[in-house]
Image (cartoon, rainbow, N blue to C red; front, side, top):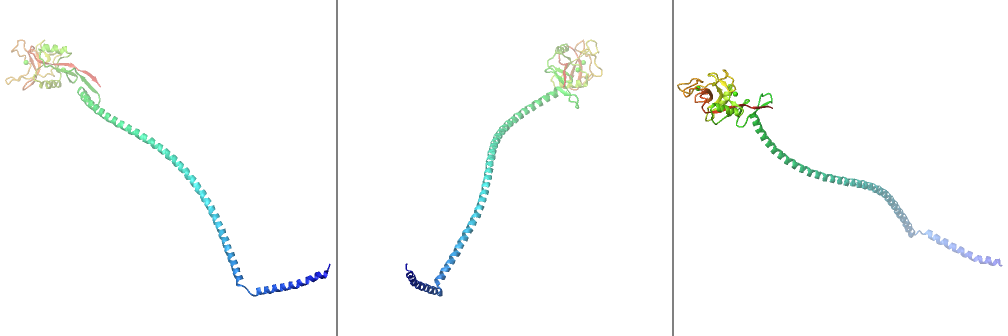
Length: 314
Ligand SMILES: [Ca+2]
Ligand SMILES: [Ca+2]
C-alpha cells in the first residue's frame, strides 16, 4: 500500500472543490445580490393560486353546507309531503267512499221519490174518487134528510129524537094518522065498508087542526065533497062516529048553507028529496063557507079514510 499516493490523489480535488465552492458562492452572491422580477412574479402567482385554491375550497365547503342543509330540508319537506300525500290519499279514499255511499243513497232516494210519486198519483186518484162518492153520498144524504123530515119529524128542537110516521102508498100522513082521499064515489055505507076493508075507517075529525088539514087537502081537488065517518042513523040528532063514539060538542065544525036566501047552519036533516031525511055527513067547501053538512046517505060521493100510522121513534 502506498499512503502517499492516497493523500496525493486527495490534494487536487480539494483545490477544485474549493474552487467550485467559491464559484458557487460567487454565483449565489450574484444571485442574491441581484433580485429578479421573475421571482416576484412567481411568488405572486403562488399566492394567487393559494387564494384561489382557498376560495375554491371555501366555495366547495359552503356548497357542501348548502347541499347538506338543503338536503335535510328537502328530506323534511319530502317526508312532510309524503305524510300530506298519505293523509290526502286517505281523505280521498274516504271521500270516494262517502261519494259511493251518497250515490247509493241518491239512488235509493230516487227510487223512493219515484215510489212516492206513484203513491201520490194513486192518492190523487183516490181523492177524486172519494170526492165523487162524497158528492153522491151528500146527494143521498140530502134526499134521505128530506124523506126523514117528511116522515120522521123532530119532536122537540132540543132533542134529536124523531117520530117517524109511515103510511101505505097513496095515503097521506098527518100527525100520527094516515089519510086516503079517494077519487071514486060510493054511498056512505059503501064508503064506510071500503075504508074498513083497507084497515081503516071513515075519517073521524077530532080537532080544529085535523079539520083544517082535511079542508086544505080537499080544497085543491075538483070535487070537494067527501064522506066523513059521522052519522045519526041510529037515533035522530044523536051523532055518532063510526067507532060509536058520540060527537064531541067542543069539536064540531058544521058548515053554513051557501044560499043567498038561506045561510043557516047544518045539520038541518032536510027532507025535501027523501023522507028519511039526511043522516050522513060529508065535509065540503063551497063558495062562501065550508064545514060539515048532513045529506041523504044514498048519495054517492068521494070519501076520506083514516088509519093509524105505523110509528117508529128514532
Ligand atoms: Ca081523526
Ligand atoms: Ca043538511
